[in-house]
Image (cartoon, rainbow, N blue to C red; front, top):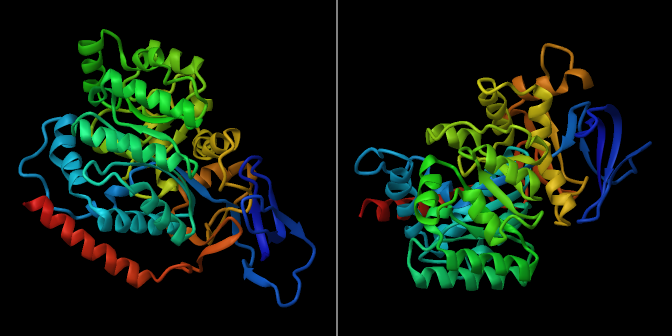
Length: 419
């Protein structure tokens, strides 16, 4: 049992403030409850009035990109979104091997924890090293202390052998752990692979995690090759039937696609900074708000930054209130709990050393979250009742050793990218 002494707890749903001592139980079923006193000789984190609230969830990540920071640029500037994929990300993912996959996941997990996230929903790609890749990522996340929901990106772009290995790895992993069936965008997925992925998700009760309408090219290819837009193709294949299914991006869904999504039980994950970085446009929510989550798309592990970006990007498309941005940040808790995934109970908390020059209370908490809070305010993080970050220090791994490993593997990766 961990005790938080003198914590100012902000309820992530009601935004109610309450100050007192909090007892935090360990495990997936662990609770966090107020107590009158802290027992002597107990494990105690003294909060001294600091703010405490539920930790964050990254609803769409690409941990395999963690070693890309500062990497060599492509030989020429990409002309469009597909060019970015071909010259950068599809080149990088082919270079990954066992050591790089593990180091990438470890580096990404360290950053996520430091930013207050305790749960990562990841979409992995390593077409030349699919076998065992998801277990490596799970191991790295768990060493840092984070929970997860993983998938391996399935695609036809790297040939039949890589596709089949990916299906085998996904099935093997789902029979041991909670996870999803990953797919790349429609324009790299054949009808046979789509059917196989849907059947695999059904048989393992897993749901899909798929990139959808991120750029106009995805819709154009689908119309050209299949005669329908992406959401209709997925609907006809049965890919929208599970409430566990996650659709990433959705920037170029038309009104019909948004209507189809609204009628389905699937969820949509917005990745505002990535969309801006790739110049593909801004998400138009239009009636989907209650099923829109937030992710980072591999840009970083900072969900407070993602929430701020979602708030700012919405201002040119009808607006989003600070409270709306906070609710969108928190909606991933609903996705996980409604689908019975473990690892995100009330004993996942973040301690914030946030001392603004203005009053903080329930009525203005969302505005503080959007305009004031940042990763620098994350002081301690508790995952499943156990400290993973204490006073700014990762406590379950050797940070210097992990950073050294990441740097070595980054150098190896960059040499391959140059060759």
